[in-house]
Length: 389
Image: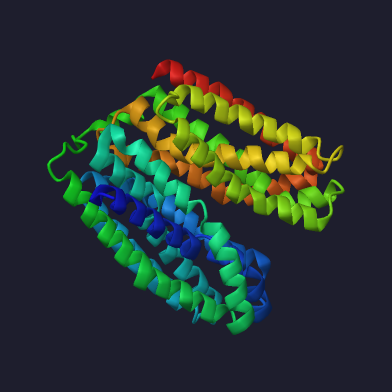
């Protein structure tokens, strides 16, 4: 295997561990946190919401840094900062410490996860970055599969504080070195290749183009559709008469379905255009909502929902940088992609609150109907963006 290929795979492993530690650690350890600290559930939830908010605000700044050639420093520094923040989180005694450290984790997320990793690959590989991005997401899609059993085992055996310290140690001792070595190998292979230009003014010009706002709306609607359903999937299914065990199993299927969707795209990506894949992906989300609505008729349909919804989101993760590059160009890609990520990150931050409001006011069918309408709006925006690109 050549240096370039090895570097991309090492980056993929680093992203997997980064998401497992910085993104999924909360969900994996929340029950242990609640049992030990005894704080209000809303306070616990505010921590990761704050992190996502900080990450969204900083995304354009981090993108500009990648455009200026600092991608490697961000990937390494973010992993180190995240590791230190997790070690600090393991020691918290007061709510203000908890929230402050989650804000620091948000900075780390914005510096060393997908947005910066994708922008770095686009800068190094240009139009050939899509295949590398697929490889990264193919592996990183297993982050939740790794985080939940590992977190549960560590918390049960040693307590959540030890589990959090292990996560911090992994970020410092494994993720950071992997990111450093990955970038070293990638740069060695692409040192003489043309990098994506970072000409001044392209990011500002993008804001004046209608297609930019079309993409922002598309990514926001897709994010809301997904996270509204996923954040309340277990209680939604139970309220529809599905047993708790089946509901949990269906929720656990969504992650592997994302990886499967990316794997399928990896096999056909050279033969299928971005516009066609985008249309198919949004239609999959519409079909997923229909399957979920009919779950009361047959419980097996919940797995159809999980496969369609998970597969669609797995593919969308890969499509997003390709859509941005093809619609708005690769000049200052990092800054433009960072600005567009505000809508998707914002959607994931507010989705649990919106889901709770919909669930209480309109019930399961009302929530599913709202999500279906969001996917329908996303389909319309997708067609419009493709026509304007």
